[in-house]
Image (cartoon, rainbow, N blue to C red; front, top):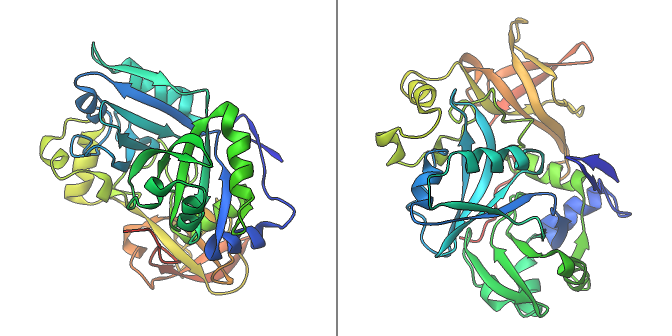
Length: 347
C-alpha cells in the first residue's frame, strides 16, 4: 500500500504485478479506482457550458454514450483529462483523483445560471478489465452492461447491486468502469472477485497496462505545460469545435494545428532490456538534446521495455534512432508507433 493522491492505494496484491498484468490480458482484473472524482452536470445549457472549457464536442453525445475529453487552460495547456457521459437529463463526469478538487472548482466557477455541478463523493468506482469482463458481467446478472458497445453507459445491477456501468477503462482491454454507492462497494467487489475469471490488480499493473496501450497518465504525459496538439490528442477536438474556437486555450491550440507544434509525444522502444523511467533525457545520436521520457518501464506483454515522451518534431517520425541517457549512459532506442499492444475494445 502506498500514498497516492491523498489515498492509500495498493501497488500490488500477493500474486504480483506481472501476474496481475497477465490476468488483465488473459481473463479479467479488478481495479479499485474509487479515488477518482465523480459528479453530475445538470440544467439547460449544460453541454454548451462544458464546451466552453473543453475542445471536445459534448453536444454530439447521444444519451447512453460517453467520451474521453480534456479540460484546457486559458494558455492552451491541459488541466486534466476526463470522461463525460450523456445520461439523458444530465451529464456524468469522471475526473482524475489528484485534480478533482481544482477540476470541480474550475467547472463550477465557469457555469452560467441554471446549470449546476454536484459532486458524487459518496460513490466508489471499480474497473473490471480484460477479455472475460463481458462474460463475468453476464454471469452476475448485468446483461444490459454486457450488451453495451465501447463507450456505452447504462444503469443496471451487478449481483443485485444497483450500479452505473460504462464500457470503458484505461488498460487497452475490453472492460467496464462501475460506479456504485460507497456502502455497497465492498459487497460488489467481493461478488466480482468470487467469479472464477477475476483477480484483483493494483497500481503497478494498471500503469504497465496503460503504458503498453499508449495511454496518457495525467501529471506525467500530459499536464498544464502540454497542449492537446503536442500530446497527440488532436482527435479529442471536435470538428465543429475547430470551426468555432470558443473554448479556453483555443488560440494556442489553433496556432499549433495550423503551424505545427515544436514537440510531440511519441512512443519509444529501447533496443536493450534496460527500461528508461520518467525524466530520462532523450538525445539525438549526435548528442543534441531532444526532450525527456514521461512514462517508461517494462512491458510484460512484450517482454521488453517501452516508454513515451516528448521530442523535437524533427525526430518524431517512427523508426528515428535516438539515445536514452540512463544513469549517464546513452542507450540506443527508436521512435515507435503507439499503442505498443493493440487495443481490444468492444466496437
